[in-house]
Image 1 (spheres, rainbow, N blue to C red):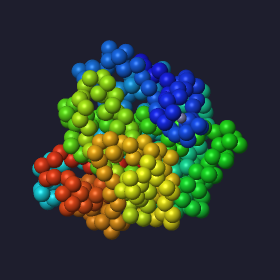
Image 2 (cartoon, helix red, strand yellow):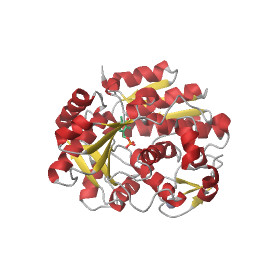
Image 3 (tube, rainbow, N blue to C red):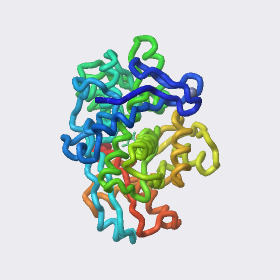
Length: 385
Ligand SMILES: *Cc1c(COP(=O)(O)O)cnc(C)c1O
Ligand SMILES: [Zn+2]
């Protein structure tokens, strides 16, 4: 059973009732974080019990928000492989390198993790029609889970989004609206239509539960490393749900007593053509200003305004992490290297983590013996047109 107790604003500490639909803290314009009774969770959630449960996100149901098992929708998301990549490691002069391969999720990206949770919980709370602004992959995932849950989905996507994203949205019977401009323009349209029609907006961090699905990536990494976390996690950052989710996961695991205080240094990789988090991190700022004229081949990183900027920047600083920007040319080279040396055809966003790693190795920020996990967040196949 879920041990969800309430929702909390990380800025002002206000609490919100969890058993009705909630969006974000309107006072602080901040995302809300789901809180659990972890002492109660630990009575049934143990490393041994977990290992015996069928694979997938729902193994962690005590610290996920869905209460009634009838609403645990699934297409087989989660428990993606943590692949050792020894040839690539050797080439880079490293000893311990892994790729967490999220391309093996339903709809080919880790967006499945967030959307299965947002849709399942919202349907449990009685909501039936969804809207999302998306760079592409989140729309594909919403369409699939809405079909699975027999709900309605409206997807607002930039007109120049990858072709496969448009196909998968319509294939699942969702309503696709193409918008001239970026995801931020799509978001404005989606918000307006949501108000008008009463659709539930599952835009990044505008509701609390996509984060809960994404946090399971952190739980899986911890489990795979035998509760002794790696030294560095390199993550391609758009809206930042994965990064903030993993950070939250580690705090919950520490509260459960399964890990200690040590955290992996979290690294946020962005594209040079859209790097609001990198700029804010380097400038020592608490907030990220919107990025003008955003452009990159990594569609999922083309997020000029970041709603969870404060949380992302805090996660990077609290873990002694860093943020790096890489050019599109380096992303393409890294994509080629990963595919030819290890057989992993990564999405450009995933390949960006390898480009970031190369940069951090060259700077000496990552040392050759350190245990490093790269997140390949999606399949390269989704970008073929
Ligand atoms: C959305 C997306 C990202 C960015 O993820 P966030 O968790 O929002 O930062 C990275 N890679 C791919 C393939 C994506 O679709
Ligand atoms: Zn608040």
